[in-house]
Amino acid sequence: MYLQKELNQIEAIPQRAGKGVSMKMLISSTEAPNFAMRNFIIESGGHMPLHTNTVEHEQFVLAGKAEVQVDDKTIVAKAGDILLIPAGVAHSYKTIGDESYSFLCLVPNKEDCIKIID
Image 1 (cartoon, rainbow, N blue to C red):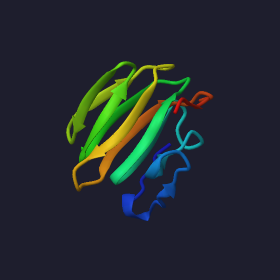
Image 2: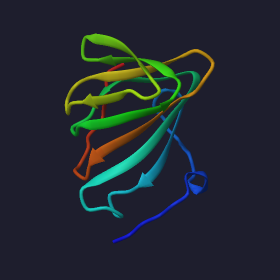
Image 3: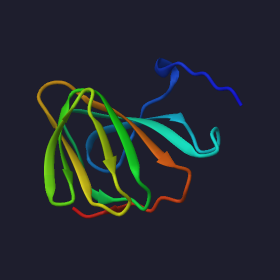
């Protein structure tokens, strides 16, 4: 199946967890057999709380900078960086600077249970 969309035509859905977080569902689990592709945007001054997922996350940072906590390590992720967040590993995001932090996030089409830690 072939699929084409325009990013600016996809609605950004505010997320309940964190502050200033929204998500665009680029390719949903109903549109592709193996992976879903999402675009998360965390506004300047925003954050996503420490949480775990039961599926891995493969991420590509499009814009901005953020402190990303992965398990007991904190890194600074910036545009052009690639991250792998393993399933079950606690992680969080906090923007740095005046620019929004935007990243693509690919996840396998499996049930994902999210647990907020803080």
